[in-house]
Image 1 (tube, rainbow, N blue to C red):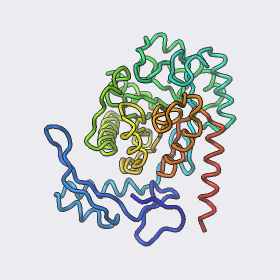
Image 2: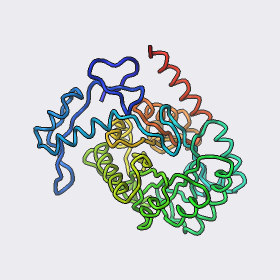
Image 3: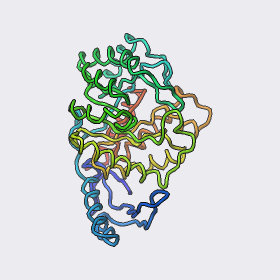
Amino acid sequence: MGLHNGPPLAGALALAGGSLWFSGCEAVAREAGPEGPRELARAQIAPGEAVAWAAAFGAEAAEQAQRQLAALSAPRADYAGLSLARPRLMGILNVTPDSFSDGGDRFDAGRAIADSLAMAEAGADILDVGGESTRPGAANVDSAEEVRRVVPVVRALAEAGALVSVDTRHAPVMAAALEAGARIVNDVTALTGDPDSLSLAAQAGAHVVLMHMQGEPQTMQANPVYADAPLDIHDYLAGRVAACVAAGIAPERIAIDPGIGFGKTLDHNLRVLDRLAVLHGIGCPLLVGVSRKGFIAKVRPGIPPKARLPGSLAAALAAQARGAQILRVHDVAESAQALAIWRAVEAAGTP
């Protein structure tokens, strides 16, 4: 899919109803096979040709192409009260002793609350509070300990008027955080890690972020394999969105995250970032987290996590240029500045 700013060509469509538009797309037909999806055909075509191209593979394929085209171009509804007409920032707040980048920095609740409020002042639209590290090889944390870590911080931030997300895969932690004032559940397992998570989020009326992860944190980087990483992730997330809607979570309450670094090699991560736009075909807001992640140090070896700001900004802007509506970041002020410049340049090219 070729994405562009400025006045569209004839036949072009706006990506997710925003300022990016596309006049061409890559169509792929796949079918299920005994060892995973099998590709049948691939073609570069204009959006207006997609339904007819898909019809060669049956009426169901044509209907799916029609739905995906509509979802690719439809404006996104507000998410948790935030308009997505401009990119939003989710500030990362790890109240953990062992997170890959900042473990221990904000383990004290008072420090965590003060730093979070500073993030909001610097431009964070959402504050994402997590009490368990999900870095590769991380150990599990007891839910009671996770609640002890996150609830005082969530409550203080909610009382201060912040929009708070809880980063957890455990239903008891979700319940306690929502009771304390969180409005978003950000789950690396896409609400599959705890049998009670899906029904709890639905009954609570929470907004959710569904992330893709291949495997478990302890083993996810051992040998991740995909038929086609961007398409496999699309299909997984589309399935999870359908499951959430069936459970009673309204579509406008759902955002999706491709899970950069979670069960993916360097090549997988780069291909997924390059082809993020395909995920807009699901019809949900797209959240992307690339901040300080290990793939940056694989492109430029030897860079420790806290020295990865330039790479983080470059990857975040690449995601933004492919239509990501929410960026999950450690360095809020720097990210806000980079986005402001990106938007100013974009606006300069619009009549």
